[in-house]
Length: 298
Length: 229
Image (tube, rainbow over all chains, first blue to last red; front, side, top):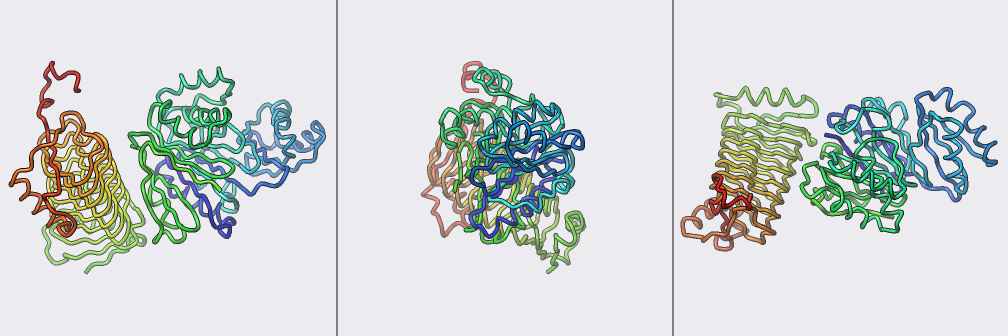
């Protein structure tokens, strides 16, 4: 069991409240996943800038002087904001790949959570309420976001095993379920050049979709392909720079509820995750069909 | 009328109060407000009372119901009226997966759509769905009646025993050992009664339905049928 929440805002007036709404939804899903929690939040991109979100088990030493060291090494100006065990670097878009490589060289203990124009991922082990407080998720604003509460089945309870998983620029995926052919798919994806940080089944699902997008497939086609190539139980919610998508396996044991109003599209593993959203009483509420791809993009 | 604010008083207090009604006759009308998708609302009631839930419910609402009439003025989460023994459960909205699963008696009415596995392993319950039912509905259903005014999803009635399935719309596919059967006068009579009690008689006439049931080839293992399992 795991909990998934997601919000795609249509009304810009709600953007300042995105973090607060997602945090409330995330905490409601604690019963479904008390092991760890995470959130991917998409802010409005700034022209020519990118964000690199990093995590360290030793943030005091790893983050000390990191921005200066990177600036010196790359010859660019960048800013950094530390949030508990995570740090968000604001770097020039052109220097994003170099910055990522430089971080690994300068601070081997650091893990990359996400990279891209608008994505930031924060995830840690612990109760959703505590994780949300550590990162002050409620204060964050953005256009859309995805959250996950984890009850681990396929791999260890670690920060890197928490969701969302990001395997491509501005991409992320959260998962409720378990994949049974992930080892085979991982081997195939490795041959195709994809890299993996964990032994986790969900990371394979994320990399599978990223690989499809990399080869020029649309998000819709990439999600369709999960239905034929991934075996197991899954409800996936996928985030991209422009929107989010939902797909459930054909058996559809893993629950999913969606709500749409003029202001937003919302996803919850259960209806109770959605009950405090504005206008939920009159929203169109439905259960996404099995083996059917849904996505919303701006 | 007893009004219970679930948000303020909590689930355990509600269900304790409802369980305490067994054998009593003086508090017969209940209203539950602020359900907010909570789990197990009014599960395990065993008294001839009338309970109205003002909003949508989470997992296992009205589970194991005996005697009570439970109305959900919203949609219901997974496992609504699971293992119902008797009484009536009426949902104004949609029902999530495995509605009425393993039910032994009583009547479950879903005025919207039911998703996958509606009536899975039903054992005597009657289910009337005004909308559509999802895939694998009535899987291994043993007895009782499942009535669907809309369309049925894939693998309807897979490995069916003696439950009767009535579908007015299309059936995406029939499961193993489920076949269409003749509608005889006694089936029209059963449907007439169920449509009436299921508050659906204004929406559909019994003659509009097709009947599906078991071909009775999978009851006990027969090596000649091995390919059908």
